[in-house]
Image (cartoon, rainbow, N blue to C red; front, side, top):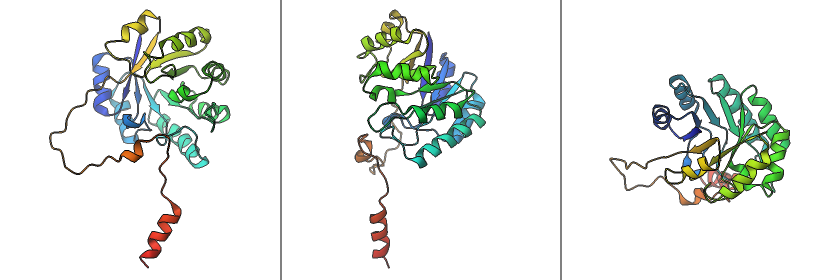
Length: 240
């Protein structure tokens, strides 16, 4: 069974390889489901690891429906990730109704070529996973990361099994989301060939400030944080 570790730092990627993982999905900010890592991090990991490194291309947290500017950023990030030597791309785009944006996703696939392209867990938001699965096959996706539309893959195991049957071997079902030492055997028993997990430990900081840098309002994935034109204009005018 191939074990892919979702690594959010150089230390995580290094530990994954040394422990025997087969592949890395490199990202930042696990708290919001992952976003595109810095290019410095990509370069450091690719230069020092021997196992394949797939890079998550997601320009922000929140939904998976992107503006033209955001989409252009994603294409540039793919090109730069390829230049840095990554071995695969993880990404995807949804329409406003959470169906797969096939045209834009196909464009990302073409940008990623000749590297393999993985459709990420935006798949778990689609209204019909079986329609979506065959749509992804049609546009050339070879692997989809999914928890079976549940908070954890263990809870979504029955859907995952059905997706595996429905795939007819044309696309790999990469099971991921809440897979742990306690439940991983269930996925092996169900004959899944690949699993995705982070297996992180939360290590306390040695020195902790009373000033918190986290902002709870920015963890709401039903909202997208954008600097407001009118507020900025009024703010600057108030200083005149």
